[in-house]
Image 1 (cartoon, rainbow, N blue to C red):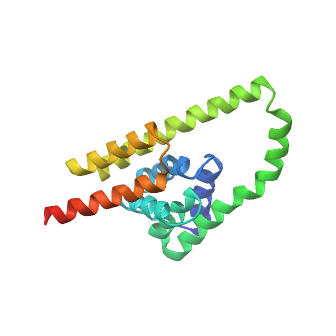
Image 2: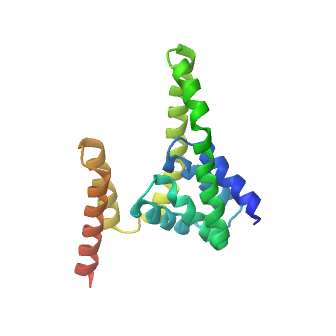
Length: 173
């Protein structure tokens, strides 16, 4: 895959999502479903790497880019991640003037709902790849419940999931 095409695919994902993991369905559609250059398992691994390293949530795209084309792919993804940052200032000027407009508010609500639906469309197939045991289902369900019904920080939930996974592995052997 060419550098330019890979950059364009990651840029499309960066520009059409408003937070790091919201780009996941777009990345999955382009790289796993359409072009078959990574697997769901590799994409899951890229997300785990991105979530466990410091920095923005979208860093998983750099790992995904690496899976596709090595260092060139990681560079293409990194550049695509930073490109939208250059558009922030004009966007903020527009948003600052228009947020009181009911049409703009309705448009923003629609984008949020669409993003939630798109995120769900990628999350379910990736969950199917990751959920392979009763312990995995318990960790996923418990993590979801903790994040939905408490104010516990995501980092603590992830750390707890790692500890439960390790304990499960130790008890299995």
